[in-house]
Structures are given as structure tokens and as C-alpha cells.
Length: 95
Image (cartoon, rainbow, N blue to C red; front, side, top):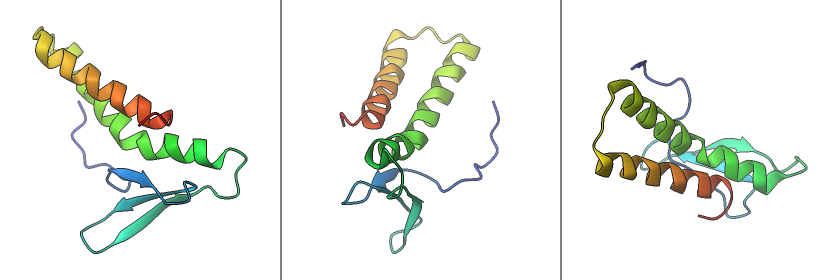
């Protein structure tokens, strides 16, 4: 697995109050706009998908690691699938 530091704003990312902007915390004092989707056709849906990207990436990486390592611990696998399901729900607007 690639352990390089990602070249994007670290998550978690969340939706703004209007639901058309994706924001991330750089530190306790700064909030950074990751994406402004207010001028897109499906702004709120696109924003939800983008906001879920860090969690989706993390869940996919963890599941790939389990697959590569051949981990058979059912409890640990169930936990990873739950994280993936939660991220997919966030992307679909089901929180």
C-alpha cells in the first residue's frame, strides 16, 4: 500500500449549512472551503458525494489492505464493511 501523505485537504469534509459547499477543517481555527458547487445542476447531491470522499477512500484502502493481507478476523472485517456503508450513506444523503 502507498503510505505517502495525500495531496488533498485532509478530511473529514462536511456540507455547509446551505448544502452546496464542501468544507474541511485545517485546524481548530480555520475552516477551508473544499468545493463550491452552488452553480452546478445537482449541487447538493454533488456536494454530498464530494464530502464523503475522504471516508470512502479510507474505507476502500482499509478493505484493500485486509484483502491483500488475507485477514480472516470476521469481527474486524464487519467493522470495515460498516465504515464503508456509513460513508456510502453519507454520499447518498442518508447520513
